[in-house]
Length: 198
Image (cartoon, rainbow, N blue to C red; front, side, top):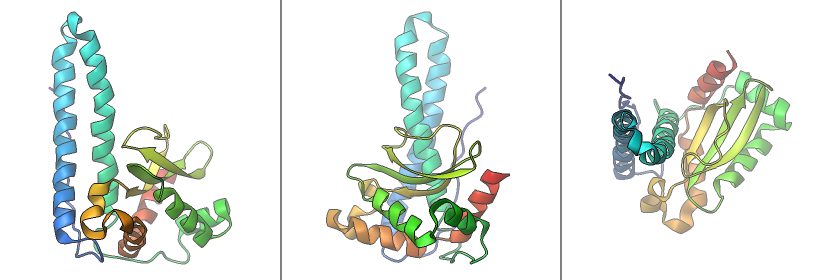
């Protein structure tokens, strides 16, 4: 029997700019990714027993990366709001690593925000590469095109329209990005970093 992915619960307080309704709908979307990731795996297992279904299995496997990454990216995203906005400690190991990589924390943050303004749907991501000990900014199309293999997500910013259009309109993308960082619990990002560098 395949062990199923489980829907996670998040303790998200009232957010600046991002309405309760948007968050409620967004969480439902996340739950759909979890359910679909499970469903695709079940279908792959069942169809793999039939040698005539090789093509369909290959296409389902392709679909699995979309559903799985949609699930995981959202888990990082929602977790970063938990327990309310908290600033980054000046002595944070994460902040020190950013400064070593980019020279200046604000310089890195502005670069990350610029990546988030990429046209199209997807994610602005900050990864940690354990092999080179580097922090890497990346744009990921949809959920899965452009993911960096073996790298751990540290910070994920959802830039699909469903995350901001109802509250900000299409022209308010920049305001959504600013509010995302005002709502962010940087201590969660610090924990993601500590976990990645273990």
